[in-house]
Image (cartoon, rainbow, N blue to C red):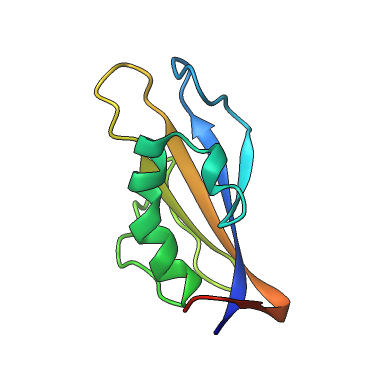
Length: 106
């Protein structure tokens, strides 16, 4: 049994040509995993796992639309590997939970 100390939100940040998702759509991880395109889920999964357990990634993308924030709230951006012009980019936001959530995995 494990505890989750953070909420993870995924927001479709960019991407006009995707047939499955639209800009502004939001999902909560892991509750909404079944609603994500499998390619997109595969793209975000590793990064979400790092964030979910308190880690952060070293790149900052300073001066770009994908510049991350690190503080109480952490943001990261991930692009879907779809090779077409769909160009979906997901904004991942980690926020601390007021009360840890018990889960059946760690």
